[in-house]
Amino acid sequence: DIQMTQSPSSLSASVGDTVTITCRANETIDTYLNWYQHKPGKSPSLLIFGATYLQKGVSPRFSGSGSGTDFTLAVTSLEPDDFATYYCQQSSTTPITFGQGTRLDFK
Amino acid sequence: EVRLVESGGGLVQPGGSLKLACVGSGFSLSDSAIHWVRQRSGKGLEWVGRIKPSSEDYATAYSASLKATFIVSRDDSQNTAYLQLNDLKIEDTALYFCTRSQGFGYDKWGQGTLVAVSS
Image (cartoon, rainbow over all chains, first blue to last red; front, top):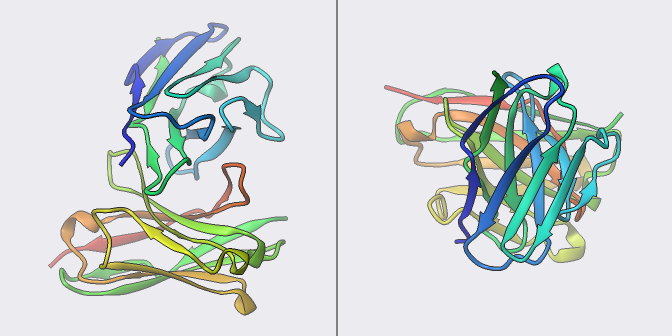
């Protein structure tokens, strides 16, 4: 199985801050990397697909970069609604695997 | 509006079985791969398995740890996908989501159905 490792596991920030989350695969996945936002009691929501492509309707404050094994999700000008848990996911090979999640909370 | 709605969760004893359903509306399920993802209490997202559309021969794949105990299937005439859960263990207690993929990430998710395994 491809292992996905996110860092940090948790992150504290304030409204208006810019944050970055990294995701590393233990083998190359080209750009088969997606990012999701998940809030308690809600379904996960797709933010970025193909490592860099913004899902329709998602704020451009979210951006993704990377290829191969190292990827980054950046969120600029944090808004209150952004405080959630973020997951990376590789869709290169089954079994599909998620990172362990990064919890973003208020500082 | 594109929607996915899961049903079929509930309380079951260890060793028991359940069949979850995922009904699509506002789109044709037959064009999509359907994946199942679960979240155990306090844990992250865990991929369970998927079934591809007829154009890809309804190919299935599963998490290595769940192979042979969970089975995904679909009935495109009913716009419905299924997850058969067999030989359930306490650690299978989780919220089970269905989600669709059309090659660009999982863009639509159901609200989830809760499976509780307990004696």
